Image: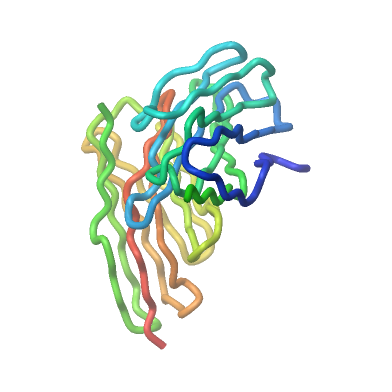
Length: 115
Length: 109
């Protein structure tokens, strides 16, 4: 079982460059999430999706875009990277909220540095 | 807007002591609450999941309780060990999953 897989694991970008982070899950989960984690801040929700073709803003959406064209994949895009986006990014997935056992499963994280 | 607060932000206790970590949330309309552990530079390890209809869950030396009506959860760690040193995060789920900032726990040998 792969669970939740994030690609890449590490990346260094120059200011102004763009990139896409990929999150893939093989558990047929409806919900998927993108977070960033900065020192002392816990995990802050960037965007989330409650199903294929749907996305919604989280707590800190500015500077990021997302797409969920396939149920198993959730893409996070940075159109013009800024040093403030240096962070560790985590992806997660879970079943529908109204179902039993809605445990969230997390990827291993992507460490992004913008110079 | 859901807000999750964890108290204390940091805690140091001698090995062998029992301890309690606290988590509070502002909106009681949640599906579940989940406790995680995170070691420095690592990912999240799920410790316990409490569904909204449950009052507590236990795993080994860990016990988590949930009082949804008052917006509170506690994580009880019995007979603490140096290996328990880590950051503990709680997260509440409606459609979103919102995290607290965590409690950094240091167990003194």
